[in-house]
Amino acid sequence: MDDEEPELVVSRLSKEFTRDGITVSVEIYRLAEQSEWTLEVVTEDKDSIIWDDPFETDQAAFDEFLRAVEEEGLASLIDPEGGETLH
Image (cartoon, rainbow, N blue to C red; front, side):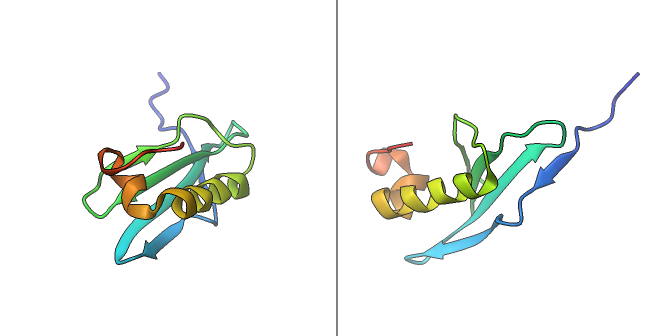
């Protein structure tokens, strides 16, 4: 029986990010046996926003996060009901 947890590779680009008094955790990771990266943003309340589509590189995932923050604002990104989402 193989009950081992899958091995995650966490990007060096994962970090806390603060803008306009809001702090989130930007988490970029992939399964060790896969090449595509997942982008997840976790709020201080432990709410999680995960992008539907994977990214070819961790840098592409982080760039998409920054683009979304610039275009939507961090508050709208983490509270989609408060505004239109683009991701």
